[in-house]
Length: 125
Image (cartoon, rainbow, N blue to C red; front, side, top):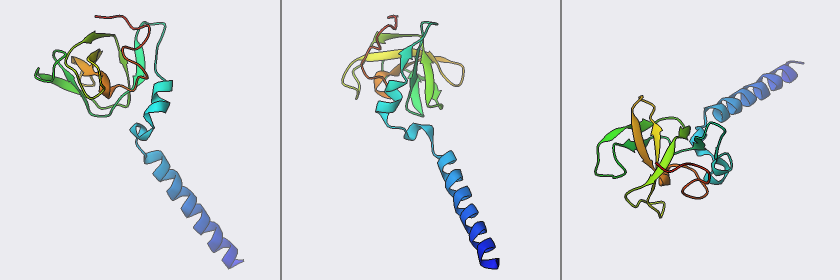
């Protein structure tokens, strides 16, 4: 009986520890292809999509412009897109959004988990 109780406690401990590790895993650890599948322009006209945690928002669509703030979340909305500096995503598309600090900024498409840029159905700004 004591062995059964010890085994039950050990299994419960492993299950709890595994659950905590799983729950603590960052949402940004999702593969980009899964996040892209969740991307889309909704009825409000905004693109709702996964993004790189820590992505920077710039004053202009240029890496040489001032940084206005970060996207600390892993899922955000974007009001529109426009052309700017080329970036690691292989294009020059930038997305305009309200950053997590309340400022507005341009985020390079390489930091937004879209399957194609610009995102279909999102207006140009």
